[in-house]
Length: 230
Image (cartoon, rainbow, N blue to C red):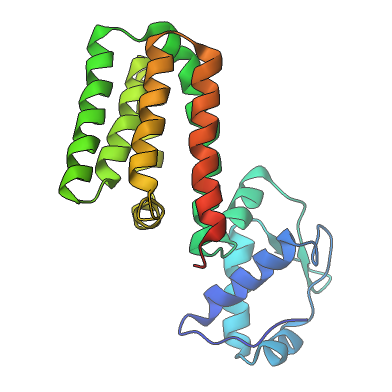
C-alpha cells in the first residue's frame, strides 16, 4: 500500500504520501489507516517517524486518533482540502500548466474592464511595454521581464488595484519556465505580434476580439508546453 521512503525528512514524505492517497481516492473520509507498526514496515521507516507524520496530519485536521483505537481520516474541511491539494507533488511542467490556466482565467476577466476603462495614460503604459519587448528582442536579451510588463500594463487599463496586484503576483511566478517557452524557435516575435493584437483590440474597445486574441496567446503557450519534455 505504501512506498519505500528515501529522504532526509522522513515525516514530510510520509505526510506527502498520505495527501496523495487522499487526492487520488485511495483514502477517503472515515477510512482507518493501517497500524503504525505496519505502516512503518511498508515504508521502511521508524515508528517514530510515522508518529511524527501522523501528529502533523492531526494538527492539520486531516486525521484523528480515536480513544477506541486506530487513526482515521477525518471528514474534510475546506482548509484540509486546500492543504492536500497544495502538498501534492507536481512536476515543473504540471505546475506551469496550472500557472497558465490560472493566468488565463484571471486575465480574460481583466480584459472586460481594460476595454471599458482604458485611457490615454494606461495606453501609454502598454505602448511602453511593447517598445521594451521590441528592443530586448533586437538586442537578443531575455524578454521575460518585458513579457510580464505587457500583461501588467493591460491589467493597469482595468484601473482596479486588486486585479493589477493579482496579475503582478501570478506573472512573477515560475519565470524559469517562462524563459524556456519564450526560447522556443520563433516564439519571441510571435509573442510580440500577439501582444500587439491584444492591445489593438483593447484600444479599439473590441472585447470580442480582445478575448479571441488573448485566448490565442495562451493557446500558443500551451501548444509549446505540450512539445517540451521537462
